[in-house]
Length: 346
Image (cartoon, rainbow, N blue to C red; front, side, top):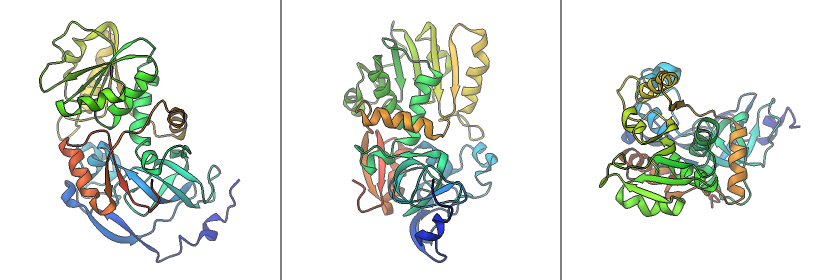
């Protein structure tokens, strides 16, 4: 049990203490970001204050940065400008202070998970969104695990009901979620086909893909192959195209909301799939990740065992975080990019 006066014993939450952070005061692309000195956040009752060693970036961070689709703003993230001026979700670091209701962590613990504003020297996170860092992982590896890793895990196992020996197609295999999905499916004994661009084919093979499709040279629907489970992370293919390569009783899981219009983004396609599913033989599933430590702990077991390894492909300093987000937006990045904040992130 953590003492209720833990906040007062650390000193790091004293008024006036400042930190370096990436901030944005308007919606926009990476050019809306800048580095600035801002107050260290104070954790609420069920929150933890983390000295950030490394932070990850993902498509969710990009959506919150741009404010698109507009549905994000209507969901409470700020209508005219970001309510949280410090972006970033994925985090790994040391616990330095805890709120009075926190029971799972104490100052000095190494953790990873999902924070509120991780592109900074310090960040707060709900206790329920953190797990202990696996000892075998560096902070850099742990920092890119939570958001994409648990999304892939839930999509394949909890929603897609993945089984050994199934034929699995991963659309968008070289990205953050895709890089975890290929590994997770392969380690469960599935025969994985990964879709990626020419320059990223070798990368996805290294993740465990049995077959690859270069979407710049070949239409993945131009085949007689039928898949038991399709995980669509790319988000731009129509339901008709995806169903054309799905086995008669196969399952399609749509992850994320890429593409679509500026109002709802790709969520419209997900809703359409869910509405159509009761009337067809295929199982068409929409999927929104649940941010809870139980999923992170499941992922941590797989990472500690060596079954899954965070695919860190790009490393950036805090001041270069805008460039990392630009590369992610443009599609240049593969795997996961990490923002190295602390001196001992490796």
